[in-house]
Length: 236
Image 1 (tube, rainbow, N blue to C red):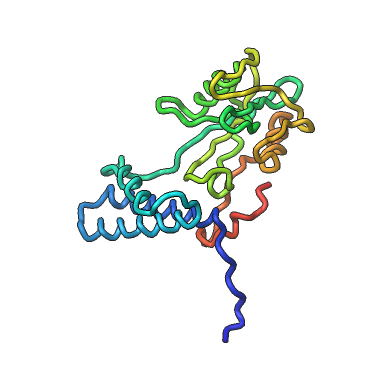
Image 2 (cartoon, rainbow, N blue to C red):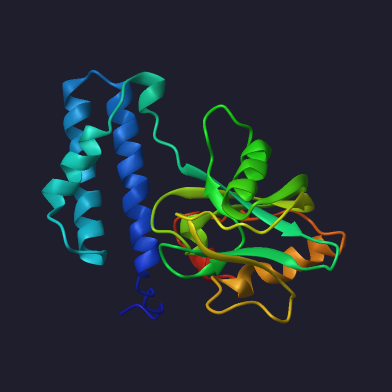
């Protein structure tokens, strides 16, 4: 009998990431092949991915999930499945405070975020989102984070978050009537409750606002990437 330790069980986060990765690989393959045999194999991979996801989330039949994925399959480059992109804005004022919004859909506080829009650079989206959501005008200073949402555990879909440090240049607090319940400026030791994941980003956010020298935060490569040990690493 082997004396090797038993392998740990996969977490729900890891299972969802594996399911989404299998799904993306299969849908991309379907978008680039006309070979019937290959298409059948890719559809089998989709079925496995849907079964994995159903064991984690439930509430749907795997065949329904497979059909939803098949409905998104494109052709050629249009069929290449990539993560969705969001942008976030760490906006500081002259008092060293952070601009935050209370999301209307969840009641949770966070710095302004939004989907990347076609036709805008990420920095342009940041300026637009901040003004639309809060009424504050800002200028982009620099990017401070490039994050894998699934690996970090703040999203259940494949998503890359680009976070920028910004500086207030004008405007006045005016929350968007549909997207925000409230907006405000907050000191580092007085963040509102509930705040989403402050332990993962607040130190770096206020370091940027104070003008301290800091490296861009990103998810380091894992070796090999699918074992998932780095999913639980310290994200400082």
